[in-house]
Image (cartoon, rainbow, N blue to C red; front, side, top):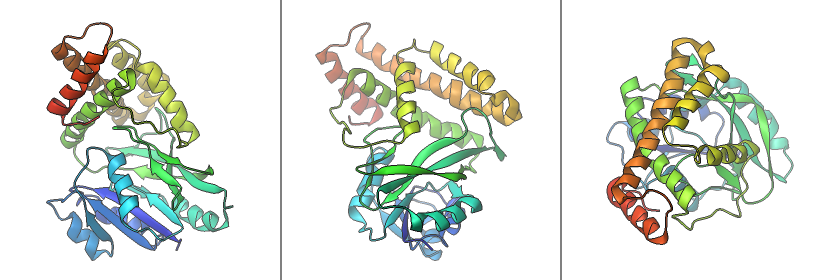
Length: 305
């Protein structure tokens, strides 16, 4: 067992939470759910398995919820791991962490992990595997950047290393719920894109250091967001499906590329177009436009920038 606290953000995760907790139970001294007042059996299942449950209202995005957690749950272990309810560590990764973490130098304050996607029961091997994410850090050294979407755990000091083995993102929800969830993501992503393009918020994370892949990803997204609406979502689908090889992953590969690459990105662009059209903005965005845009996003999308 590691000197480790695991933090899981939850809302109505009874489908996944047993698998998640049992997966990390032998690895961690403490498991804490930060729950948004679930109305299913999430809390009951977690407590029965020995986890703690702290209830806290949803602040609008995962970064704010996680940062609230590390500021308020009195973490006393040396290491902290963030994992989602629909994720789990492969046995090889759990063993690697157990063996390597106690031997790490003090200047290593973060650990990056490789994520593999399991979509509709199949490992989607192409289209971007592995996604490398900072998910583990020394207590006091990690914090999420203040982004609405695609947020990243970053380090205040020190440097990170990467483990060799994988953890899995393996949602068990049906395809209808999967798409409904992505509609909510699309709205937050649209607000995030508008914020990045027009600097609607003054929040900056200048003192936080992302991992290497996170930095590269944000640079690519910055270039993507400057491309024409709607055309870019189609181009992204073509790139991921044909160039990045999701075509090799069969029916699951097509659906994954279509939903995440074309449909989802088109929904993001549709929300951006809807906002700009409602405000009558066509061209340069001035100070008054920014103020109106912030007001629109808050009133219509319930997102405060």
